[in-house]
Length: 103
Image (cartoon, rainbow, N blue to C red; front, side, top):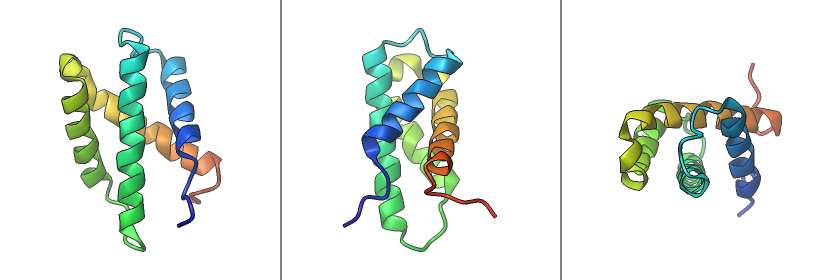
């Protein structure tokens, strides 16, 4: 099966945007990178399973938030924002790399 996008590049892109934003500087780098890696894996698997069906942002958000709460329970009050930022940055990655086009 052909890859939809480069997973490692997606993680790198999102992590870079998070560093630039600076809102999660209080988290350990390895914790944040582990969470973002898991988010990309969940998102990628979801996209693979979709086929031609539309991407359901609400469903993905819930899956990512559950994963975040499992991985980083100590940051519970910040996880909704982390997932939202991830989704925004991942969308921009897909647009920048030419995987998604807006009409």
